[in-house]
Image (tube, rainbow, N blue to C red; front, side):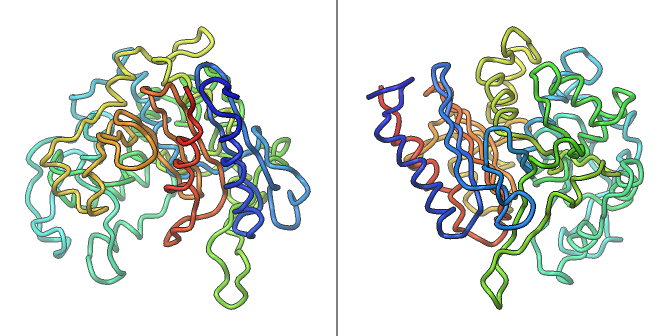
Length: 396
């Protein structure tokens, strides 16, 4: 039997994959969402926690999860609403709103001392922020081996103003526009949006994206009335016992508003909320008659914006850009290499095991929600197994 372009028989494999990871004790619960041709298929299994609060509450479409880096596309969409109303422009310098990033210096040697610098060749623009080519970002290195990596790692997240001041006091790692560097640009974009709108970043996000799309449970913290729906997040197993270790519980850092609303990783959301966002993008910027972005903005955000030269020197994930590009705040697949997303698909995963792709060629949205930190752990089904069971289920 085929429903909305999926084989009902083959959809069983999606649930079986989720159940294997719950039954093995890898995660207490999981949710997968597949949407195609206007119909939505949801698989949810397990509970919000292994024990304690949430252990008796089933995972569901309204379970609140930490998005991690899946926050980044939402940040980019919010920035584009400001481009559309001409508050911001893609190729204007951000110096007027972010004077801390004006007249930057750049390391003469990316691995060298912080005081050996040259002048930045040009100002940083909003386009640089959205394409992650502003000149700074995550620098993979062992502690004590690369000075700028240690300095960037030492940046905590106090108030937005203090964070951007500390970032601006450091040199850039590379010249603006030279190469793609991960993560930091999304946090800078959040500060820019707050200053451009004259409100907090969270307020701007709610006014421009969340409220119009009905994303009631998306934000930077979880209120007391909703905390019972927040899943517990786990990290790698305890080396001595093999038991999962709680990374963040319902009473943890998302139980109260943060001092710094981090666009790169700070949002919580639900499968149904994120489906509203993903569906709006797949439909060209509107959902249920409410337009948040123009079709032209969505096309720009979801097409590869990096040059071959920028990809060639990225260095963050060797080989990653062989089949991938980067739009605004998310990846864009440039060719199909596995049983998975088509060329032209776009999306991004998150640190806690969330993952999302829109595939316009298949009229498909696919999402996975776990709450298990993935750093250094390749067993997460958000990798190839999940996309395999999604795409093998297509039948039309």
